[in-house]
Image (cartoon, rainbow, N blue to C red):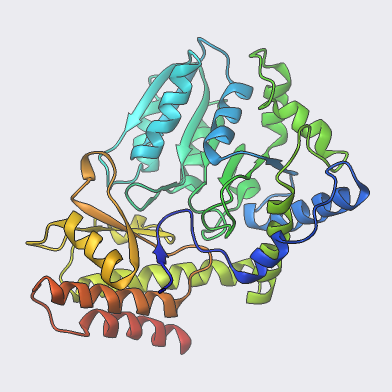
Length: 385
């Protein structure tokens, strides 16, 4: 049996070291061993978020953490702004509407980022916004919003909290939560963090904790004050995903072995550039402009003349190469090439080579080897720096 070559935007491949760490004998989540594991591991995650604040671990998917930050900071009837540039920005809209918030939606066409000028203009007519929600990396389109600049606009023009969904890029993209002025930053385990699904990670600013302390919206499992109280003891209020926390410790090992988080970020940037140059060499279009292109996922237009569903099915069946299709109105029009977490330049070269093989099977007109050569040139140029 050939292994499945998973090039999705999540879940992503799991390193052997992480698998072995998760296979350790189980320990009690109320034991001293767990307290030491929790405290040491969450401290090691702080540089990935760019924060001195505590890292909160919730045994859930990323969506539950997004719901948690909404329900803990805003009450029904209060006003919020949601910046949406794709399917997962719309998740935030749905969550906020479900809880009865008054939602002002700043919506951009899929494939475009939200600029600081657009946010500034949008906020001018609003006077009582409690929170601004944004997606850092939009998984459905491969857009990386400039959240550092958006945070500055929010801080300058409003008293609102700036809350960021970083689920599909934290661990592979730069994050300076404290420096940029992000109040709450959220991610999930199954993407750039190189873990299976089931663990959410978030960090909260002092400013946001003050708002949470005054918030009256009831919550139980997702009550962040409860998580903060238990985190001070080195535990979680309910049974945590112990095995995933063992794995998270191993993820921190791998990042340190790579040379630190800055090197991990550089690797993701390199892989992004390799993929984009390869597609250009094959005359295959890209959904996003270079300026706002994600370092963890690239949205690629359907090769001209090909039925994309048939083509992706063929790649998986014959070459075991598994890309993700488009979402929403982009279904059948794009595919998504994940290059995050446990993924390296050699994996990009492999995937591009097999993509070319599939293109030949479908009689797509191109110069064989052109995509691989273009990606290889980007890789070799980076080695000479």
